[in-house]
Image (cartoon, rainbow, N blue to C red; front, side, top):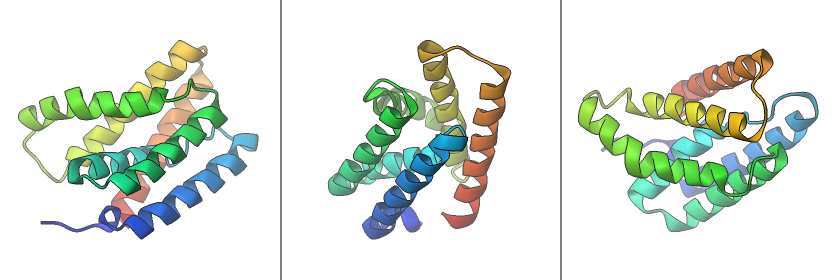
Length: 146
């Protein structure tokens, strides 16, 4: 059993506060979905290991980020549940490498966020660049710190 930082509820609570501060500050100058992918991975881990109280904090954090970015309330949370219930079982059946699965889930989540953004707003080259940049940042942070 591999234990990482996402198994610690205190770490997740502090990370939620940090993500809210970063997204509130960057909403003024930059596309503010930074760290949303890591929140999704923490959401997945909490669903998988049945950490209900930590799941509440993550859901509340994602809800505030959704409202701050102009998404419909609970749209990203529903996207996370959809990925957890339908896409992740298919990927685990097809892909047999355990170490890379969370990275694949993160990429699929950002693809879903891109589709949600297209449904709510218009697509542009700047949006593609910013989502790719946020994906790379989340992959680096996830690989180094978690």
